[in-house]
Amino acid sequence: MKLTIEQIAKIDETLVLNGVVYDDIKIELTDHIASDIEEVMINQGVDFKTALINSFDKWEAQLRPASNAFWTPFWLNGPKLFIDKWVKESKKQSLYWLLLSVFITFTTVWIIMQNKSNKFLVQLEQGYEILLIVLIVFLFIGRYFVYKSETKTIFSYMFNVHCVCSVLILAIQLISIEFDWYYIFAMNQKFTMNRLFFNVFQNIWYIVYSIYSFYFLLNHFQFERKLSKV
Image (cartoon, rainbow, N blue to C red; front, side, top):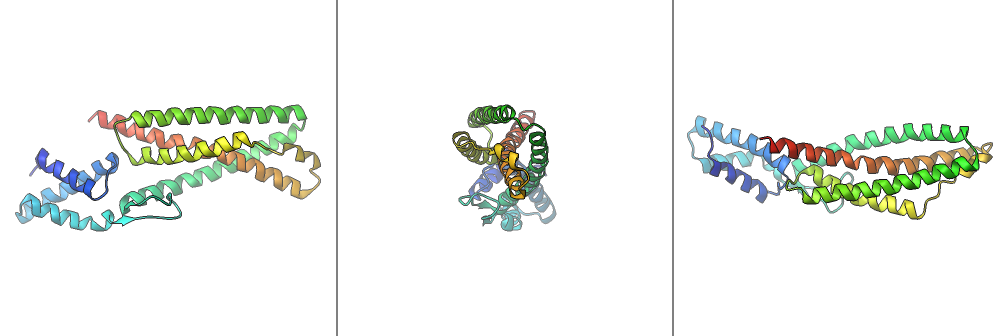
C-alpha cells in the first residue's frame, strides 16, 4: 500500500514538530517512517492515523531532545539522532584535523630548520598572512551561497558554525600574528624547539580547521544537487 502525497506531507509535518528541520535528515526519516506505516497498515489493517502514532512511538527515543556539551556548541539542542550525527561527524573530522596538522607541522618545522635566514622567515610570515586573508574571503563567499541556498541540511548548519569560529580565529591571527621563528637560532636549548613546534602546530591547526569548514559546505551542495535530480 503506497501512501498518498497528503499522508507523506503529514509525516513531514510531524517530523518538523519534533524538531527535525534539516532536509537531509528529514527525507531519510520520512522514507523509514513511511515504510513502517505501510507495513503496519497492511499487516495489522489499521488506518493511517493509528499507524502514524505507532511508528512515531518507535522513533520516540531518537526524536527526544538531547545535547552534548563537549562535541557540540553549548547552545545546540535538538533531536537525539541530529545530535548523534553531529557528534559522529565532529569526531571523524577532529581526527583528520589532528593527523593532518601534525604532519604539516613536522614538514614545516623541517623546512624552517633548513632555511634559517631572516629573509625566508619574513617571506613565510607574509605567505601565512596572505593565506589567512584568502581563507576569510572564501569563508564569506561560502556563507553567502549557503544563505542563498533553499535547502537546509545538517552540513549547512555545521558549516555556518565552523565559518563563524574560523573567521574569528583567522581574524585574530591576522591582527596579532606572531610566529616566533627567530627562536630557532637558539636551537641548542631544548625548550626552544618545543616552543617552535607548538607555535607552528597552533597556526597550522587554525588553517586546517578553517579549511575543513569547506568539507561541510561540499556535503551540503552535494545533497542539494542530488535532491534536484529526484
